[in-house]
Length: 95
Image 1 (cartoon, rainbow, N blue to C red):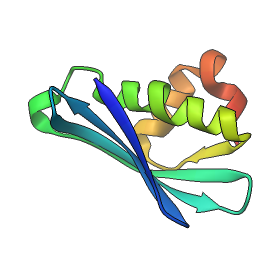
Image 2 (cartoon, one colour):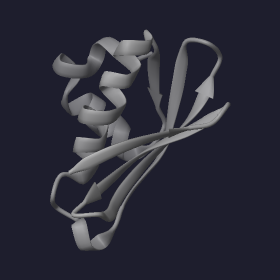
Image 3 (cartoon, rainbow, N blue to C red):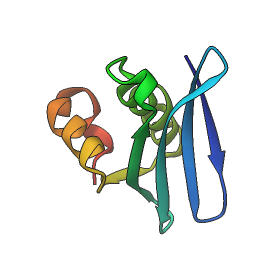
């Protein structure tokens, strides 16, 4: 799985590709200078159950925010559930 980050001035996304096919996406909005809001996660039904959303979060979003010194506000239901489930591992970046 390959995860690519696409950023604009106030929005961005992490997109997962499996064998060159777009498998899923997690989008965010920039909130000030120190945090992002994860607002949506979408996984192509063909890749459902393969851990795409979790991989995007753990291999894309979390390393990015740690590197940049940012915090995350997970408004997306999937991201919110993952933060609750994995609080010990990723809670340090939670707003």
